[in-house]
Length: 116
Image 1 (cartoon, rainbow, N blue to C red):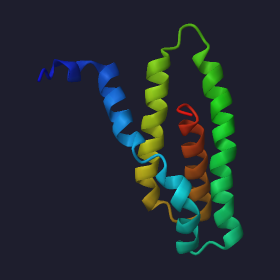
Image 2: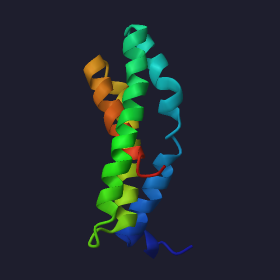
Image 3: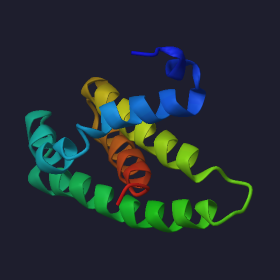
Image 4: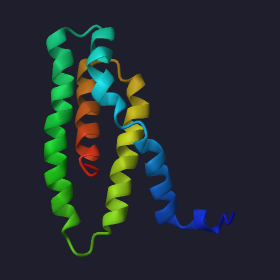
């Protein structure tokens, strides 16, 4: 196996994004239950999943617009978006308040919009 490929920044970001993409379905399933477990009421918990959906729509539009710019490397944009979604998902366990969970839901939904 040749490890020289790992020195290529584009490939490294691609590999990390694919690793982190494996968990991208988890927030859709568990974010409302996490809100309830953190002590949010059912309305607040449902707003978390709603924020993911709203941000996803905005992310699709914004990231699609950015991807249409000629000087933008689309592969790097796609991979960076997935890395951001994955990193925020990992870090979300430390976000215990409703506003912080809403920020997570927005960033996650926005960045995952690049992949859908």
